Length: 281
Image (cartoon, rainbow, N blue to C red; front, side):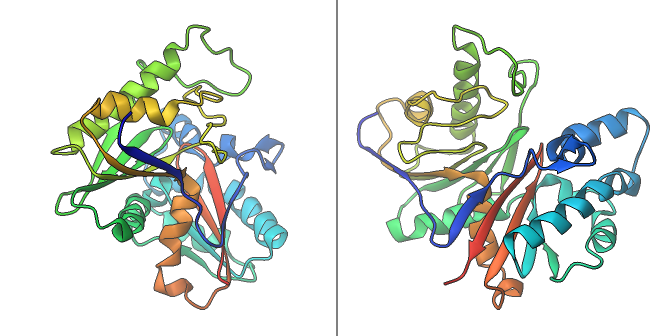
């Protein structure tokens, strides 16, 4: 991977939070507030606002707990589930009684990748690209181009949940690398010279990934493998890598409605809930 400066991006005032396993109604939060729940409800015949309504009990309890636990004075929501029909009305009910306002991102799906491009601006790149890798899809954005989504094919990339055995030959990591790198190649007209890459997992300072449904936890060369598979020896530039909830918090930073709120809980609602705390100092 020659000529790539790969950095673990640390955002001022942003700290990742682990909320997916928050105990709610005798279950873990991701089971009740995420895409699997919505998919199950669809199979039961639920449509329209009833899908969003099915999320309300879990969201109500989670908001009450998290707002108090982290002493925040605003909540900001992004992610694909925020786009469900009737989500806004459901959220108004779920947030009744909270001591702070709750806002939906104006662009719930693409707000994070837009923030990713802004993070790249100080590098003065000629061809920047931002990728927000989720558990179900990759959101892509570059200047002067329409944003694009690449859906994950569960048949090619099975979901590996906690406790499930991972293949010993690492095929799941190779498949994930192929998915992300192919999305980057397909979306980018030419090799970027700056990349913001958000991944749906914890990342340490050395960019060793933690758990995700892709099953790549502990695979230290993950980012290097993605860049090599996408661009070979031709690409050169800077890659800023961070957790997807951290990037969502960076998107919240630019939302003018939050300008006077010093502590903001940022929740991403997709396959499962992710979170980060934005503190203005």
